[in-house]
Amino acid sequence: MLVIDGVVGVGKSTLMNILEENGYVAFEEPVVDNPILEKFYYDRERYSFPLQIFFLNKRFKNIKDASKIENAVMDRSIYGDIIFAKMLQDAGEMSKEEFDLYIELFENMIEHCKAPKLLVYLEVTVDEAMRRINKRGREYEKIVERDYWEKLNDNYRQYFDEYSISPILKINVDNLDFENNIEDRKKVMNLIEDKLKEIQQGM
Image (cartoon, rainbow, N blue to C red; front, side):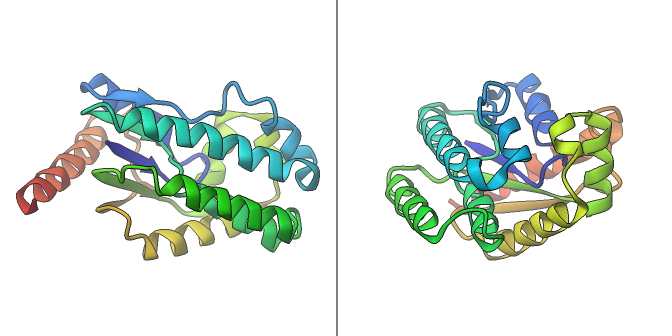
């Protein structure tokens, strides 16, 4: 089981689709059929807790299903989800009581999750992430202020600097276009394959 993580707009879904073309079974992030996500961006305080519970529940199901398959790849997972909940509490958009309940649920669920074989963390600067977000064109993302994306990037870097649940591969994608550039795509795929071989040899 591979997990791809990184901030909004970094290219997680694109990389997951490339891996799917190379024989992996894809487990998409629950964004498309999410009835709360767009409402959240317009009223974070009202919708922060139900949104995080929605994601937690869906990611828990995804990782359980993915762990039963030999070659699954996930677009984000339950592990990095806690970053968003912490940010919402820090910003006063989720109450302490809600956050404590979220953490309790998170910890109960984690006990039943099989750790991924490899987590691929895609690093990117805020400027590049915002450029990609604007290019993608989701209106509810485009209204978000820069300060939010800066805090999100900072929290991601801190979390994955301390991450120890599974092996991790960090790839800076500021100057990579693995969606349209074949050489960039080969480079990223080679980095992942080399890391997986290294993990296999160490087992």
